[in-house]
Length: 108
Image (tube, rainbow, N blue to C red; front, side, top):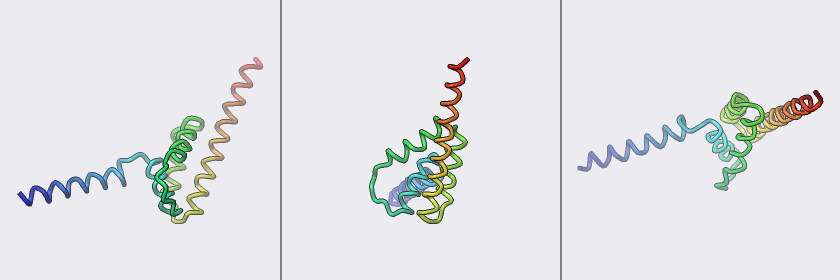
């Protein structure tokens, strides 16, 4: 019986680690890594999730994933913030392109 409990605990811990480190989407892991690097103890992930959703909606999934991977690879807080700044530039560029596409359509 004790062996069964130990096995159940190990499977539970292993499952949680697999989700947290591998299976969870890259933007969610990036938000957690950013909080860890910058010593942010808040549990508010909303603004970080919204940031990656905005990149995904305006620039595409590839840009959002590339920004998330940059944050995941960062070793320091300033490096991770630099990655998010690059993502913000992509977000702005995507929004500007959409604006110009709409402007061009209306001028035809």
